[in-house]
Image (cartoon, rainbow, N blue to C red):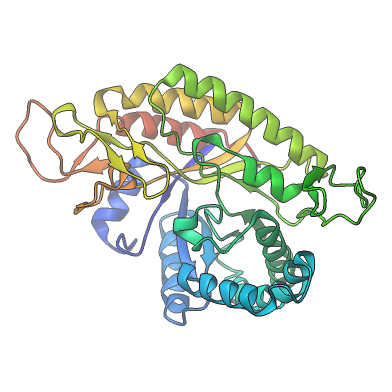
Length: 367
């Protein structure tokens, strides 16, 4: 299993300090998000990929459009066709035309960067209403994934398409519903190889089929009892492997383009963190984080994760809403409890992540 970093535009790889930290950490992957419909993102994405290649990083790029754009046209289409066509026709035909438009943009980006990037994620965290604007049901996301897969493979047959990371707290219902066939009349999920509902005999909406190459999860853990988290994640990942094998995806790797833990020194740790969606999230004490990272990485390695990209290199410099993701960095400006503040420093679990990164360089899980 290899280790990577989830980065953003604020951490340019041509910054010598950023590059030095990445080299010291020893990660081999970088993940970045880019907007399919933004002309500005295309040249700077190319620059990022060139910079990553220059320091030996393999990249996976999360392609999407803005949540506002998707939400607006999705709601407009639903309002326009509500009561005029069956739900399955709305999802299967009307929405598909919009997905083809987005997929065309994906194909262009994949073709333009075929020399620098082979791995493309489609819409990270589509299950989260804060990210997608609530526009995606699992079936609609599956349809969009099919369109993106076909466009990406046409542009570069050697590329890999990753599912958008989902599954916070190992809630993998979105993945299960996405890959299974569905009867809208009976509202039941069926074996993906079936064509008719076993209950009413009606046609089934197909699952997403073999339209992704990597099952990508953003399986952050918001609970704070390590043994309970490990036991639950073990069960959930085992179940997910069963669903994927049922879709003729046997051997398809798990991966994560975002995973991490909010951590802070004891005397600086907030009583609660804001998630916008999941209620309160409690941070892990920095002094306990190494144990968490060791145990979780070992679990992911056992389940065949190809790469886990840690979120992120640095804590947010300004985090007035106490957003939990802002405390997931491997570096911070918060001082240790017994020491005065000396600016940006590496957190106590830096060496644990570094150990796993170097282990991944020596023996990658997948050739």
